[in-house]
Length: 478
Image (tube, rainbow, N blue to C red; front, side, top):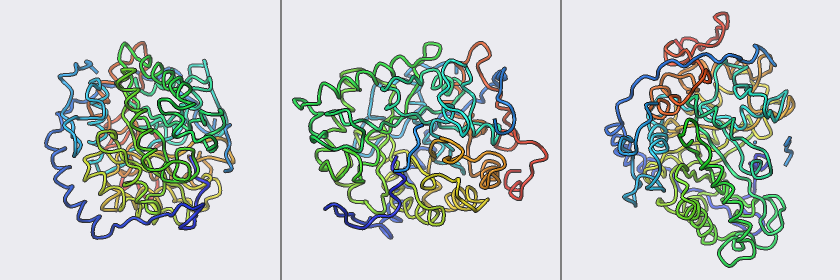
């Protein structure tokens, strides 16, 4: 994450920022890509409704219950997996042609969501961090989340960080809970500098080349990848491996990380990306990863994002991007980004998503109570490009003075609740998501009362909020 870089000069530290050449080109690509989405709709498998799960025995109480930064079914066999959209330059369905059936179903389901009139809501560290608690371990409260406190529902996408996992934390049980309740497990990795164990902002000793075979940090890099491979392969519920969306080497188009443009050339970055993917897939036989490519600020760094650094369709499953901005300029920035990224993703036959996004520094100082609905979700669903987003994931709730999801009583909560109630958003309890193959397969693994009763069937949204909580946008919800 690098939300602190909100405004930049067009040239910095000798790296020229190149604006994306879209406009008519973007619209032309989008129109051409309409055939792609028509194909997806034609081949999408018939969905069966998910049976109602058992009610969580210990839901968190109603109401408001550190890494702080200034600078977070039956189960099917493989041959029963739904037909997937292939990339434009490969006969394979995913980066990993040996991906297991549940992983394939997740990719198809994410593609299905791109065709829905709503965008899935994701939250980083949602059942791990809160404004008022952090790092729960063996207390079994894997359903606790500020999103749940605010809506009674949960995010559709839950984010975690491999950095913390490698540093000794264990997200296994939290991620399993997400899977068995039908959610999407998403990991990014703020990898340390493997040459000196400094943080991801340290670029000393040319780490982008040092991680390659023969390089001074190759052993360390492979040790970390071995740990990630072990975690991914061992992450199972009822014998079923949990698929992971892996946002590898995120924000490479920016200058701030050791794999960014200040410290790695385009060819060096692509070599590192391909080497890492091939090691996990071919050497370690990890077949439950979906690889998400996520540059930063794509309208500012378009050529870096989709030319010099893009590793190719054979190595990318999801095309996403990371973007933070001021609350007053976020709306237009995201719309511009969508006009740049979505046509490229459609043209290349990829799921498209907002990998990480929100107000720079958090929404605690945002004064517009309707920001989440009026400035984020409503404009995106009215856009000819943003409406194709599969999901948008916002950042971690660290504390009451640094958060991206508001709680009842906080300034931006009314708009967050209106966003939730509207058809523009898709949360875990949404019937649109629960009708997907992935939800049926994953939610079908719950045992011994671990499943949640999502109570869907009221319009397209689980109605968790109190009947007395009516807002001006309930006409959209109903």
